[in-house]
Amino acid sequence: AIDEYQAGETPTARRKKLEAGTIYQFIAVMKALMKWAYRRGDIVADPTLSIRQVKLNNTRLVRYSASELAAIGAQLEFAAPELRLLFEMLLAIAVRVREILDARHDDVDEAACTLMLRNTKSGRPFLVPCPPAFMRAYQEAKMLRRPDNPHILPPAHGSGPMETPYR
Image 1 (cartoon, rainbow, N blue to C red):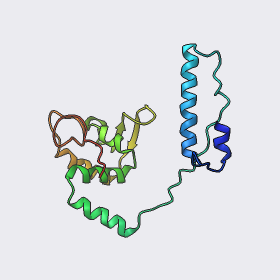
Image 2: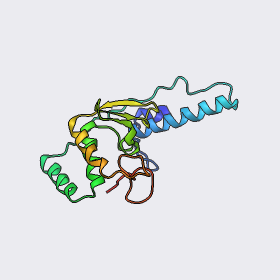
Image 3: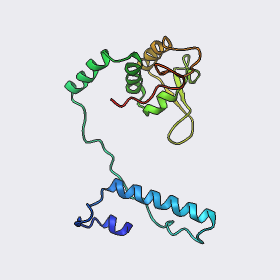
Image 4: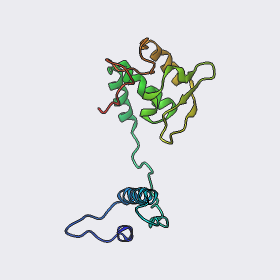
């Protein structure tokens, strides 16, 4: 099946031609499933050991224009302070949204201008240097601090980190 998918056969009446990202996901699932079955002892050998993952070209082809960026900035002026600060922090240090949302005040070293990301995609902590733009946003975020919530960007109600914005 993987060979057929990677060969780029033309679409049939029953299925479309698969994109490289779909093939990548298929291979990842199959490798994980076979590894799990081998570790459990359900199979004597992992048949996916020799299968290589496909290379993906994740180069971003679209860039925001100056007018689009200005429109986003105008919308952020009227947004909730937590949302505006989230965007400012993300633009300053370019990390994943969830990494900023999971960050706590104790993770920020103001003297060294660093942020320790504890919940990263790799599962390992990562120390990020913070430029002045991030530190300015953090100073403003400290004013939103609640004594019962250690997160840099708390939700409007309740505990824990702010939810990931989707609009």
